[in-house]
Length: 472
Ligand SMILES: Cc1cc2nc3c(=O)[nH]c(=O)nc-3n(C[C@H](O)[C@H](O)[C@H](O)COP(=O)(O)OP(=O)(O)OC[C@H]3O[C@@H](n4cnc5c(N)ncnc54)[C@H](O)[C@@H]3O)c2cc1C
Image (cartoon, rainbow, N blue to C red; front, side, top):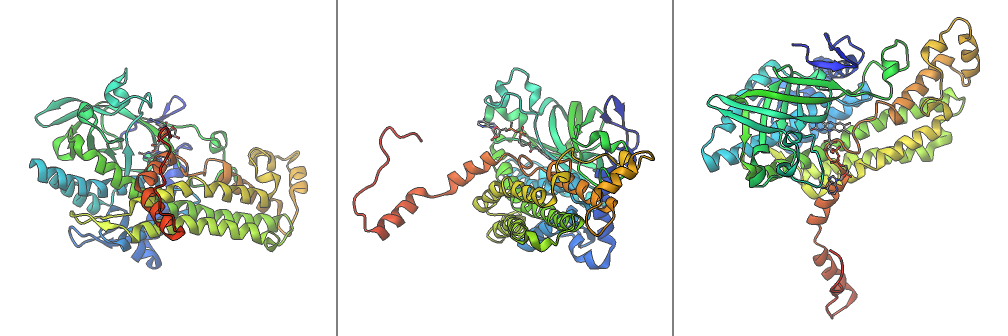
């Protein structure tokens, strides 16, 4: 692909070898490796509902609860082999499933060809086994203003020109996961828009190296370590990028929404419900590795892991909570008329609230079990660890349990990376902020109905009303 990814003033010629991108590429490569192993075939590979051919699971339409639960299982498994996420294909997977339903609606209403466009692109994508990242735009600008009210309209991705054969778009996406590992970028509107914002109601897909797109890699806490070798950073990990679209041409056949603002609400509803159901598996997968790191740290420190059983049980319970709520949201979801499965909104958004809370407790417990050297910046670098002059001193005094100093140092570094380093996935804002999820929980909770249940059971017969001046 053309080199359009930048970091520290340098253009990255090869994403598979550059320190800023190679770990994200390796994470995705491990997922593809799993797909070749017979024991994981049924999870990583499936049959296309469009062609009947054997395809990679993350290129598929999710039409049943089992399909979507496979999404969860796949992510948890990936975390077990990488310690981190495969965002370079997971957001895109969810995005094209969402647009499968939405394009069918738009076409029915307006006679457009969006659904057919999507179908053709998807059949090709399945056949080639492409990795598709996803971006709910946008940079957003001033959070209290609508897209059309911003002083710089480009802060939300928009159409700036319509041509007979396509459209020209301008704008940005801040924070997209592991786009350096992906082949394509699938764009969705970032908000539910009204008529005045119709230029921002956009969905399309472009190759990652399309002309006019500049990508900048974000800085990570472990940046300085990533440029060195040794055990300071694992061989895997996420990468976050900024996308800048400067008058990018999108041909009609890659366009799935362009101005149909009335359908943007459903985009947000479907995308967030499915994403927030499945992300419970991501954080539980990383939590499993944190449990493992905590067990290993205890032993490397000379203690039995059973010393910390209460904490380890809590870590496991946290993992299963987000995993189980996600699975519940999927099981209680419904099929859209277009055939794709949609998780239950109330339960999925409830999961997001837990996803933005419980993993932080799991990280805290992992640190508590591991001791000071797993906290950020509390252990010498690999370079110092192996220094000829004073490296032996570091190794002598890092030795604790019945294992080498190097095993203890490696485990501590992994625990640091998992709990407060670059390995932390987007539990808080990835897939949207938890306050947005709280709004959905609020909107879908029938408070009045519940008050009635309680009144009847308590034998209260009079009306209990909010004070007139009460704040909403
Ligand atoms: C690790 C990571 C990976 C990511 N990967 C992807 C990806 O692959 N694809 C993708 O599309 N996105 C990705 N994102 C981006 C993510 O979707 C955004 O971070 C998310 O939409 C939240 O937006 P924001 O970060 O701009 O926060 P903001 O929207 O600025 O929110 C900050 C806070 O302000 C509150 N807030 C915002 N607006 C208002 C308002 N009008 N009124 C009251 N409160 C408000 C929010 O609830 C939140 O508490 C990723 C993010 C992270 C952290």
